Amino acid sequence: MIHPRIKELSAYKTETTPCKVKLSSNELPIKFPEEVKRKIGEVVSSLPLNRYPDPQASELKEVIAKRFGVSTDNLVLGNGSDELIQYLTIAVGEINSPVLYPIPTFPMYGICATALGREKVEVPLKEDLDLDLEALLRAVEEKRPSLAFFSYPNNPTGNCFREDAIKRVRQEGVFTVIDEAYYHFSGKTFLADALQREDTVVLRTLSKIGLAGLRVGVLIAKEEIAREINKLRLPFNITYPSQVIAKLMLEDFYPIIEEHVQMVLRERERLMRELSKIEGVKVFPSDANFFLFKTPYPAGLVHAELIKEGVLVRDVSYLPNLENCLRVSVGFPEENDQFLQAMQRVMKRLC
Ligand SMILES: *Cc1c(COP(=O)(O)O)cnc(C)c1O
Image 1 (cartoon, protein in one colour):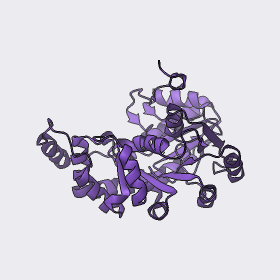
Image 2 (tube, rainbow, N blue to C red):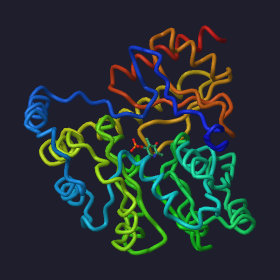
Image 3 (cartoon, helix red, strand yellow):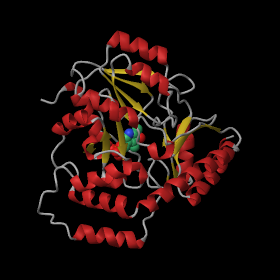
Image 4 (tube, rainbow, N blue to C red):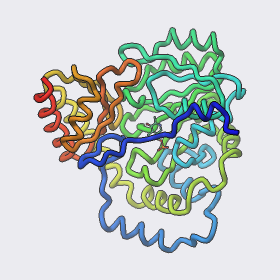
């Protein structure tokens, strides 16, 4: 019999309405050159696919360790950081102790807690979308959570939370996961803490730097912690193609990725500036490759009107504190221009 807690879940869906301009999933706008694709074809076609891949993904780990400036002993790789979130929810604290996180945030923290039957302690952000430290401390005292997740920067709000508030919650004895999926766009990190402390781990991913399709997530922790998490990792969680392609990209073609990250950072500033010039549009600050914006109109309506214009963004207005808000990812300059023009037309039509 399927447990009621599973029946309560709904399968994770992303928006798939086909649109010319897709700015809804925080992916990196990047088209790999022919030379890169040829090289990928070569390494993949020479794989012995009848064989199991390296269960440790050792060669890929070497490259990731070097890129992130850590030792391979500090790493656990996951089938996306989603899988690592699940491992942490299994491994940290008593299974009957709650999991704490601010809301709105990345849905996987809640999904994994529910799947495992752990109580969720969801603390709303303040109106300025930063952490409500008093409410967090009250929740910690009352519910005694053993595990906390902080998306840093936070998805979908785009901001990095106050560092002191995260540390203050951790000080209460809560094992703290800093999900740095957007690290390459924020430059802000708890890496030093993760390497030194047994109560802090950092999550990174290749998904937001152009390789979402490979499904490679990275947990960075003190060696003792990484070793324990590694015990519950499914042995072949990183497929053979993912191992060799990720290694190739990080080793030989990293400058292409870096170039595109820089492009997104430039475009983010331009797009936010231009969008905020449209009458009635409010743009929220961002440390990520996406940002929130708000109009005086129902977000569902703006969303639908943008689809008519061939542009897909994410409607996040159903989330607490995000009335009338939409989330847009930064794309190629041409895509951003098309989004801006579409917004101009939509706002004119709706007023
Ligand atoms: C996109 C995202 C991830 C990435 O998950 P993967 O499974 O690595 O693709 C993790 N955390 C947050 C907050 C995200 O927005």
